[in-house]
Length: 111
Image (tube, rainbow, N blue to C red; front, top):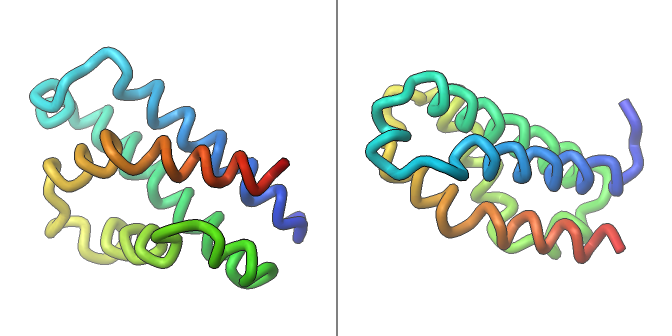
């Protein structure tokens, strides 16, 4: 795997874009009832957590420039190991309020 921090930032940006695409034309009720969309979104959050964890390992300073990056990794761990405790409301809140700021921060760091 590439050890360039920009690779991991690019991955996060791309994954955020996919999540936005997945939920672009739906509301919370549709999200809650659509197992396929929920699974896709949660899987992508796992991927974001992995990318940020790898970024942390190779460039701690850049990682620390991303607000809540450690919480994103923690969320990834919950999705992987405690998925039964994840509420749809929490995931939807993160998608609605935090995914674009995360994407924008990574894009700023990439420049």
